[in-house]
Length: 266
Image (cartoon, rainbow, N blue to C red; front, side):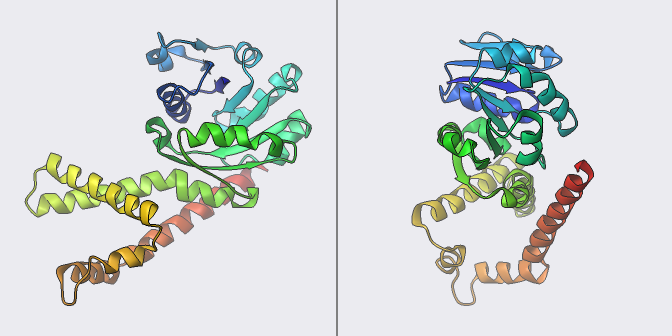
């Protein structure tokens, strides 16, 4: 696939790493105003670095936009004259609706919104997708790309704000839980490196159990807890201290914030 990433910041670099690692490209153009920030990609076969968005677009079929929301409208205005019937426009810009993209470049273009997370750099992203009516014809291309970089789920656009909180911001939420587990392990006698190793692989194992067995989390919890045991004692204390409530409230707060951002952009 001939892919361009327009705006290779933190997310763009993560996507690029995933695409290169998984051999998902025929060619890959990376654009950034300051190329020093993506100099690490110099030397990769069929990877091209440029400040020129038009150059990248003319040499690519799939256009992945990972720019700041404030810059996106201007970029769409600039590239509209060079878009062709072969181009698939994939936006990762939070809160920027399909209708706003259509208003800039036309509803006759293949337009897809994607919400990956930074785990895409290691092929483990949970990416949510939605498309305009025309873009439904090319949604399989987006699924093929993002399934090679983790797992994708196509959803209605109305759920994309919530997906941003659960999947993209969710990486930070899970990192905080892993950090807390690491700190607890240190307090229980492990050194810092061992503690983080225990926390990371235990969390990976928990997710893998659910993915493999297809069970509800409570079923897996039941298999660990015993009457009057240490696991249920710990779980009950965590709930008493508000673990679940704090996580839910935090995610709702994040969702409310993202909706505020969207209103400001309208």
